[in-house]
Length: 104
Image (cartoon, rainbow, N blue to C red; front, top):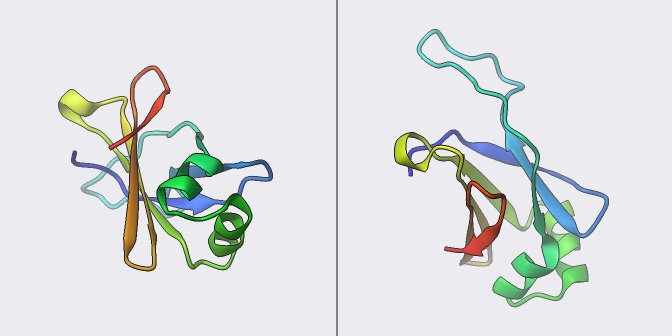
């Protein structure tokens, strides 16, 4: 799935919000499209990484869990993929066009 790279923004609730890196100016070769907030249940991600939710939140806040958010193009337009990384593990989820997150 070709994509734009995003970054994590802390969310005050249980979910994690990933957004497009729109703060950097686009180059002359690329064009940025606004990205809606992409919220995913932190408990879902914590479970996939074999962490409890409190530890997951702490590790996210300290940068020990990282996330890569990608936006689909072409046939995958309207879909997003979020990959969470911690201690050599990866938890990957895909958000379909209806807004539902599924493990990938």
